[in-house]
View 1: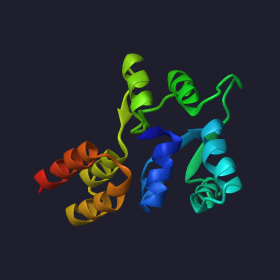
View 2 (view 1 turned 90 degrees about the vertical axis):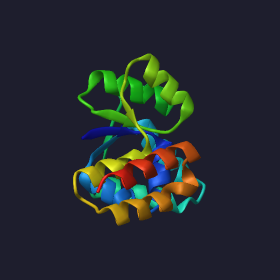
View 3 (view 1 turned 180 degrees about the horizontal axis):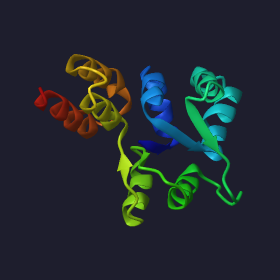
Length: 157
């Protein structure tokens, strides 16, 4: 899948220690403004996640695409515009405001926990590892996202 990812999702996957594997098994793309939000602003504030994301960009695990116009003040706007112009499968986010925008514009989205489920469904990880990863992600996601993904992981043999 070719997935556009918002800053929040990228940070959550990084904090949970899952970003590298997901980036190795999905084509992850971020707009330049998301890179600025996560890496540039993060480094200036001393966030260690920013350095990890920057290394992934440098090693080609995350692709940064410059926005065609510089009118995008926020990452949400850039994600919607890029999805409409590009060939992407979905936007990865669990930001409620962005999800409302995506639903209104009929853009598919995937929650961070469901990226784990997708990898599990393709046989890249086993059920035990999927549940373990979900537990690592659980401090950063809401209870509903956690519960639904756990049920999905537990129901497949």
